[in-house]
Length: 162
Image (cartoon, rainbow, N blue to C red; front, side):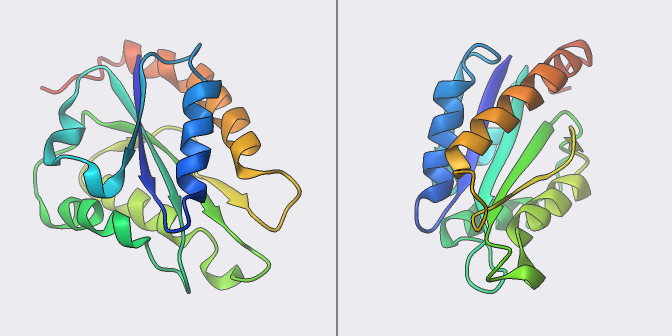
């Protein structure tokens, strides 16, 4: 099962986290590709037998990172069905400093994908930067568990574009 990690980031923390997931989870998915959201082609959602992972920080007072806007805009303005897409969400934020908008970008992407018919596998993970666990370590632990739980599900559901 392939995994594409789509990264929304400002300070590169989400990118470093995604790269750690890529290296730490290779036994559960192959290949694993990390793509910065502003570099994602319009047809990113069209690959058969692929799981998708949104790995995004939240910027400022609940904003989507600047590099994530093109992908989000495409999700919100296009009408093609994404019922073939199975995805997970790993959000990064700082609850101590931004409690009202903690990991808000993760929720924005989840709603945009769901509105197009994509199916989220598992709960959204919200990593708190004010905690003791580095996002890279939390990312590897969460992603490996997520893949072990959901990759077989996606394979058996025929995660292919109709």
